[in-house]
Image (tube, rainbow, N blue to C red; front, side, top):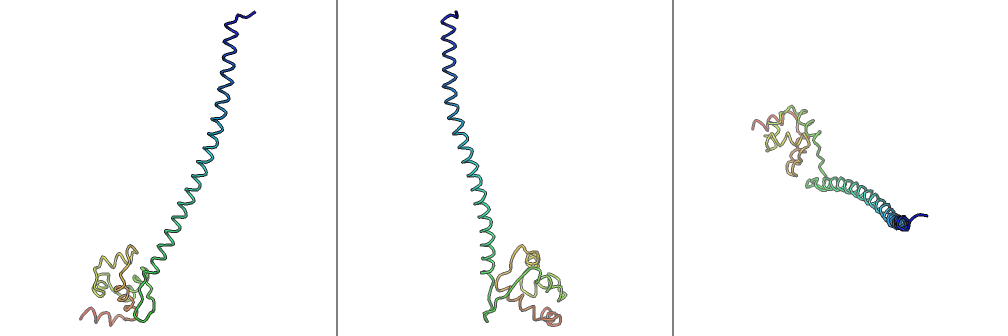
Length: 144
């Protein structure tokens, strides 16, 4: 027969394992639950960030539409960087001469044509006036 000390030791270790198993089961369940909640929060965060990006793009477009100037007659004047560059080439002007004609710097013309900046309402009206001009009239204005 086994001695009492070894029996007690075996029984104590069995009971301790049983209690540990119960504790670890509860911890495993809570860890699984927390991981699910974290994954859900990550998905929600990502969806919200995408929504913010979309709203930023929409508001930027809306701001650009509202910022477009109107002439006194109530007609909206459209502006695009490509059309300004095409207009300048049509008239056979350098960026410096177009800048002189519009009363701005050549760097401003470069930035407008590259799309980095947008002209103010006063300059947009002057650019719109260029559309009706020909090469001769532009040459006369630059001379005088």
